[in-house]
Image (cartoon, rainbow, N blue to C red; front, side):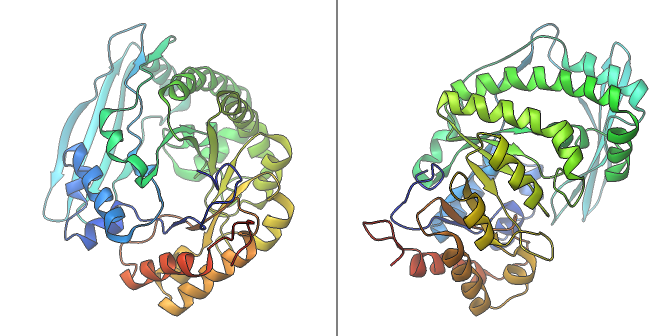
Amino acid sequence: MTAMRHGVPDRVPVSPGIGPWYATRILGLSMWDVTLGEPNVLVDVMLEMNRRYGYDDWCWWADPGLEGGRRDGPPVVWREEVLQRDEKLVLKRFSVETDYGPLERVILYPKLDPEWEIEKPIKDIDADWPKLRALLGEEWSWKAELPTWCARIGEQGIMPLFVDLPIDWWFKRRHGGVEQLIFDLLDRRELMHHIFAFYQDYAMVYLDAALQAGPDEIAIDGSCSSISMISPALYREYNLPFLQEVAQRCKAAGVISHQHNCGKSLAIVKMVHAETDLDVQEPLEPPPGGDVDLSEAKRRFGDKLCLRGNVNTFETLLRGTPAEVEAAARHCIEAAAAGGGFWLASGDQVGRDTPEENIWAMIEAARKYGQYTAEGRLR
């Protein structure tokens, strides 16, 4: 928390991006234990990872959402149907009736990999958007309390509650992939601004309840809003006003705001540094997947933003040696840790087959090279 508030902790915090994909392999489980099991299984699995390695967890996996939703109609109930089940995968269809007709989703659950939504509900934007809006309602209320099991996290990690950037919110519901997303943003501008105005009203009611619930931070998911997927102009047009409002409300409430953008993000970092009250930006991926030089980012943006990153998830953690991981982690610390406001982390969730010795190498590098003096300098 000290680093996230741009202070100087006793040591550079370190989080190697462990998620259930990696954790289930290490513990001899399948992803079905998490994706199709009881909710507490995920919590048990991830807390065991923290006990095993002793890292500074960002519990992105822990956000169940607040209890509540629309208050101008009955609760939404999606009907579930198993379409296929064998030794490698489970395929399920989820459907719901609205006043304008049905919506359907199809989700694939591989035994060893994360679930994947292969059919999203919004297929025909003109026919299906009215269905989704009717489903969401026009008035909302959420219970401003964290689930009781969140207390189990305690001091082991940062507990976030999430909101999606508008483009990410739409991408998670719009069938057709990135191509269809871009067509909507460019060819249906008037409708998309109408949809996103509705979403902003909806999200701000949720955000106010989330802030009252007392999380450690509000995490803003921009996984689908990086410059690897959209242009800076589209980010500015559709996402920036939303982010400005979220960050301003977080600041007023004294709660940390934290944005995640996979892939290329330098243009976004410039924007949010100059034009928002955002506190934390991540994962600042380096080339080839990203475009951020951490030394430059510290020099240009470290006066205001806590920087979180940026050990390469694939080339270094998945495919590298422990010595290469240690060197990369040390480089990140030397590039960005001076004066605090830095959190050593991976570029994203580590892959299932990441060598365990590489996880240890990254954690030990923070302990070895990331100690601060009483004056706030690296030892």
